[in-house]
Image (cartoon, rainbow, N blue to C red; front, side):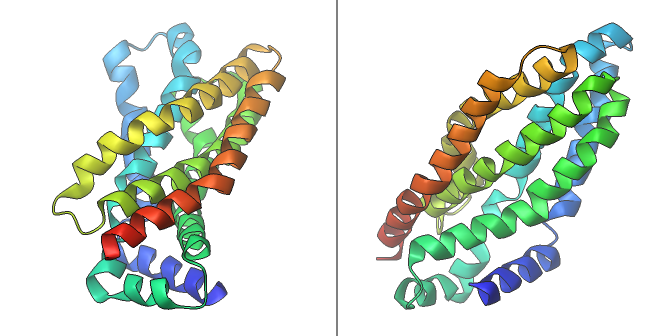
Length: 218
C-alpha cells in the first residue's frame, strides 16, 4: 500500500493536475468574487465561508478525471484488480493520494485566501478545521465518480454531474461550521454532522467504487 501511495503521489505531481492546478483555481475564484459582488467588507465577511468552501470543492473536482485515467490507459487497473491487495483498499489509497496532492494544499492555503475575502479573525480556525475534516470525503466520493466513468470518452462532464449532488451535504455542513465559527455561534452540531459524513463515506464508498470499477473492467 505504501508503494502504491508513493506511485500515485508521483504520478499526480508529474501529470500537472495536482496541487498546482487546484490552488490556481482556488486563487482565481477567491480573487474574482470581490469583483463580482463588490468591495463591501461587511458583505465579503458574510459570504467568505461559503465562497471559500465552494472554491475548495470545485478545485477538488478539477483533478478527478485524471484520478484513474492514467491507470486505465497503462493497464494498471487490471493488475490491481487481480493483485492480493483488495481493490477497495487500493481505491482508498488513491483517494488518500488525491487528498494529499489536492485537498491538503487547499486546507493550508484557505486562511491566506480568507484575507482577500475579509474573513473574520474568529473564522480562520474553524475554516481550517472544517476543510481538514470535509475534504477527505470529497476525494473519496470523487474516486467513486472516477470509477463509474473510467474508460468513458470525455467522461469528465458526466463525472461532474454524478459527483456534484453527492458533494452537497459535505458543502452544506462544512460551510456552516466555518460560518458559525466566524460569527461566534456554536459549531458542535454541524461539526458532528460533517464528521459523520466523512467517516461514513470513508467506510462505505470504497466498496461502491470497487464494485463500479469491477463492472467497467469486465
